[in-house]
Length: 422
Image (cartoon, rainbow, N blue to C red; front, side):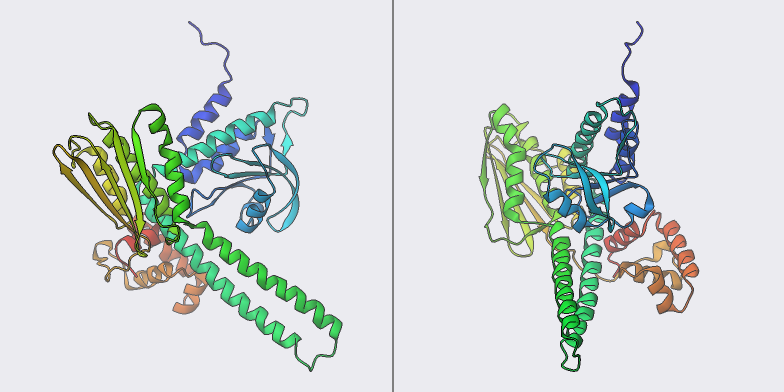
């Protein structure tokens, strides 16, 4: 029988979104929305991806300049999932935008210079909203099920962003504080100019500090909030499986969790609870979180017969996630009494001993360049420090990518960190 006349372009777009890796989801979403709503650029702002909260596609002039502070300000003006259109400050200038916020994740979608492809058809915005909901949900799912390699790269990106922001904050704060001191000097008699510039400089200092604090907050999640999200994630099990899940909450004043640790912890507990509830005669599972200041401590226990296999594929997958964060997982199976699982996740990237990189076959200069990459230095800084040209630095970086079998600076940093390279 012939297939009915279905909206195949839309269905293909949905399939492309469903298959898209996190690094390509902005491009896939923009391709999917263009037939219904034109735009100069598409930007996604999601706190689920702590390493890369922005995902962008479109005109380079816009996507290279848009900032987290601008997106956060825009998102704060949205009250629900209702699409909003108007003028907003983005990429350093005021421009027309269409903005949508996802209900459960609070992720933000922004389309700049939106224009209907078919002005007489009002359904375009509905399709864009529909596609955005699919993309936002897929981001949540992909982060929850992220492989160890993604966790390592995300942690490296998060640490790099905090380091760069801290450096910029210190540099600009020093400059502005010096400016303030000069303007307040008694040798300057233009009181009006001094007062005006002093006020502007003070506001700039406050804004810069606020931006730094906000950037740092994006890669952290209060432990109590992270645990509450876990409770929400597991609520369907109590509703549909008839399993009682007891939650022993962490201290309210516990240290905030790095985003990757919070996401991984929820995914690990979800996986453990599902594995436990698949056993016969399990009616109750208890999960407890605690924090000792250096580690997130997780304990999950069931009341079954003790039939959980420590070498089961599902447990092995969870153990790989734990190891990706340099954590430890231990299972005590007690026949007739149930299973008791203990997980320890370090809250900080652990400093490892000097790396053994002999297998990478790096030349002496390549090792120097890799050291600078790990330190977060840009090509211009590396060139100045080593006394070589930027083109020579780029040549060495390309060779490093080939030898390390990576495709980006962040991947190279993550791989180097995973091998203890400092």
